[in-house]
Amino acid sequence: MTVSTKGAREIISFYREAGVDTLVGEEPIDRFADEAPPSTASPPPVPTPKSRGPAPSVTAADGRPLFQAAPVAPETAIMAARQAAKSAATLDALRALLETFEGCMLRATATQLVFADGNPNARVMFVGEAPGRDEDLAGKPFVGRSGKLLDRMMAAIGLDRRQAYIANIVPWRPPGNRTPTPHESAICLPFIHRQIELANPDILVCLGQPSTQTLLHTREGITRTRGRWFKFDTGSREIRALATYHPAFLLRSPLQKRLAWRDFLALQKELAG
Ligand code: URA
Image (cartoon, rainbow, N blue to C red; front, side, top):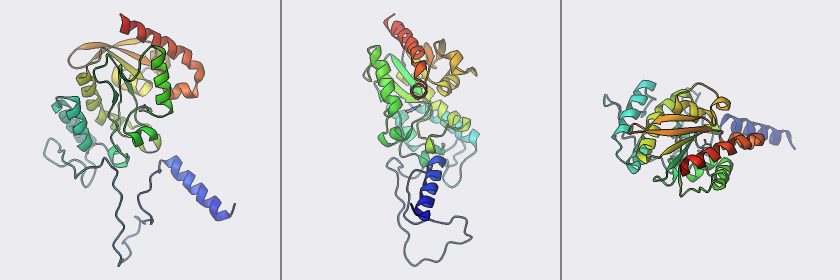
């Protein structure tokens, strides 16, 4: 391997680890340069991700456009998210709202919105953390390796995606699959709350610690909360919620599958009851 090839590999792997995994142009642009070099040729067009629609249409409570020139303050974005989520009367309306919501920076780096999969009329709803690369490309939650495991776990208790509704706390992929910041989760929270209320499942299953802590208002770790039933107020009624391990964790720690299996048996019993 030549030195330059090795160098190129190293920088590419550095980029991948840093979450830079999408090409947006052929030529590098030095954004630290004081002034752009004079150019006679017109710049190449920047490819637009398929879901990035027209210019932002959502405004904050004071009428300011959200996130057009510069990011708005976190509290403003959270307020706008609350108002927008509340205004959605159906799941389709909520999805449409999210398609144009500009208050969360993750939208800018994601390929598209990952809203939900499965049956919105199902009695059970699973909620994970955030989409990964496969989900970002497919536009559906849990389609990658952990999704395949989730499918197998559901199948073990007689469920498939026709009898379950699946979503995430955060509906856009964080760059490089990093954990969503508390602030990003807080902005997305009103939307997932409304999504749960509109889907109106009988049972909510929180997959993993971030989903459990965020939705069930607990600071306890998942090793303590998994297998426990909680009460969850959808906004319209109280339902039961179960915390369990995230399939991605189970892929890394297969020995814990026996505990997840117990949780799924408890879920099966609850659904039968
Ligand atoms: N992990 C999640 O939490 N959600 C997905 O959709 C995929 C992986």
